[in-house]
Amino acid sequence: MTETMSSIARLEEVRKHIAAAAHAAGRKAQDVRLIAVSKTFEAPDIAPVIAAGQRCFGENRVQEAMRKWPELRARHGNLELHLIGPLQTNKAADAVGFFDAVQSVDRPKLAATLAREMEKQGRRPNLYIQVNTGDESQKAGIAVAEADGFIRSCLCDLGLPVIGLMCIPPVDADPVPHFRLLAGIARRHGLARLSMGMSGDYEAAIACGATDVRVGSAIFGAR
Image (cartoon, rainbow, N blue to C red):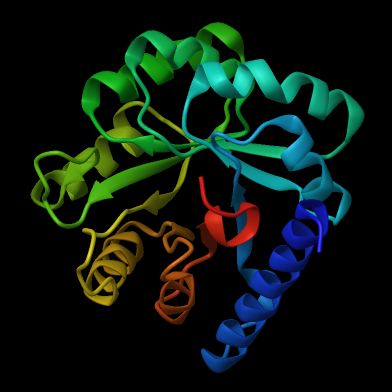
């Protein structure tokens, strides 16, 4: 099997697992959006996955995405691009102008900068607030104790288009309590989207209500 064929086969396998997990949770498969995480992979690796019908992709770095995606977007219509990695405030203008969604809003200064850039550019990509559910000092995300106030500020004070929450549970921890915690915070604020679950735990995330799963290596192979 060629690498191109194997990436398509892996994509189909992930789709089947998503459908099965959704069914087991009493949900519809179409209610779970697959975000194919294409960070570090180049256009020739991504193109076959687009050809197989995948339309939503996630990137970690603004500059990498701006380098490789314009040509892909020109060749393939109806693509949706999410920034899922940490965002520096000095890249906020580029992120607002380039991405369809930013999933890593995690601090007041960044939120305020995004609000100014949206006003300036007249463009409002969807936003997700990243919550550091494990309160890990080395990881991005708003602290759990500060999440409610930060969400209210983003929605009410800044008027940001926040549609959901995102989390990355601690490595080697049971992810389920973290997924449930995120879902509870989202319910309190009436936020419909939950971006949680990656290649190793997306089925558990779906059982906990994930609406967006971010899957990279299970589709593209090891980095």
